[in-house]
Length: 255
Length: 271
Image (cartoon, rainbow over all chains, first blue to last red; front, side, top):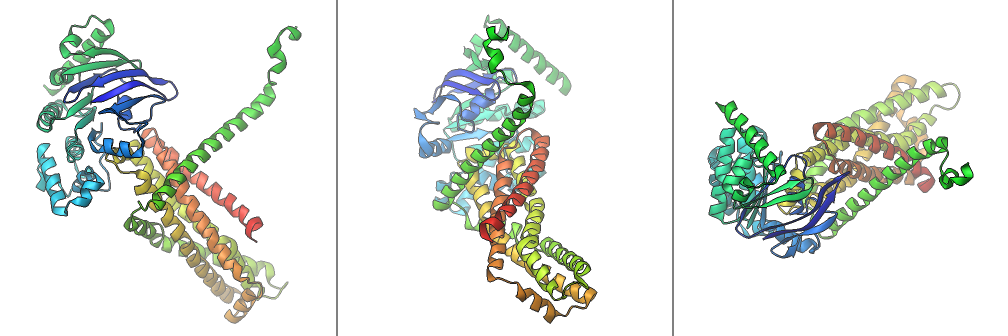
């Protein structure tokens, strides 16, 4: 379970103005919102990649920001993070990148053969051919492949929670659909709690159990996809309509 | 009228404000950088004391910072020796005994040019590279990715580089001193006909054994300064490719300035 408690963060201007949100265990949750409303910032506070000015985030009732180094290390072990542009380590090949997804303590207990097996398994889960790709550098991969390797790195340690930061950004509609299928498939197979930050409203509504919308650093809506679609909040409606229009343009581009 | 307006008496005159505002901004920037560097060094120190720094990575960084810099350091020091010798010859011929050239070249190289020129070369070759590398990792979220998989970038990236700098720089300074003096000696022989024995006689005349230690100590200080500033600047990069370029430029500027300031502090402290 992930719980955001009054998370406030300002850079020059406030980005998050006291966000309270609870994502239940095993739930698939999507967070929508226009650009610059602090979706990614909120996601990053979950692993203390950004420290909020006020408030806290709790994972399974353990404080991320006030629990100390040991607690944070344990939390990071059970959370996988998929970055917007994969964030693969340039100087490491695919195998070494995925290897980094395993906690240090786990690596010490494993033989290199076992690590290779884990990496192989993770690549197969994201529908990549390990034999073809393991020794390649990130620079040799396409955008879609990088994203999948990034997902493989996030799931190789078998996390209990997966955080997805705009997993379909920059992908063409075909790859977008493939990655969305992958998100659903992985969430079901690995039985993880998924928190998805996305612009893709249509995909998010289709995949997730609950959705929320951030607007101006505050939570504007939180509910089921049905409630979102039927919301009479003009801001939610306008956002949904605009998102639908962009989705239509994407489909036309493919045709 | 002014007597009725309390702010009129307390308001700062405009010209004074114009002078103090930039001073305040610079002071604020210096304080922010100093604070961030102090935190960085505290974390680096903790990584050393908890033995969480890979020896293999330190060795790799010593190779990159030290061994790979040897050719450019030799060339730079050699040219410095040649120039010092030629300038000295031009100034001293006919005025004072030529063997003094040995002392001039040796002392210039060991006390000043060897350490400082080596450091300046390494600012460009190593410091800029570290800032650009870490800056790129920062803007492409690779630093965040390291944290997310439970690895500490300070332990993996910062601590090995700083220790490698402290190890490699004094060794490079030693090499620079040797080749600078040799180049100066051969130049004095070729251009002024000053024999090697006379050169070394002059060199020994004003030599103090502390001088070499002083030179290597400068190497240690510069070896600490270059990677520390480079890492600090790299890790606070933002704003994409343009941000990396800007941060690298600023980093080179800060490193060069800091080296010259540290160099200026050495004589009153140690000589």
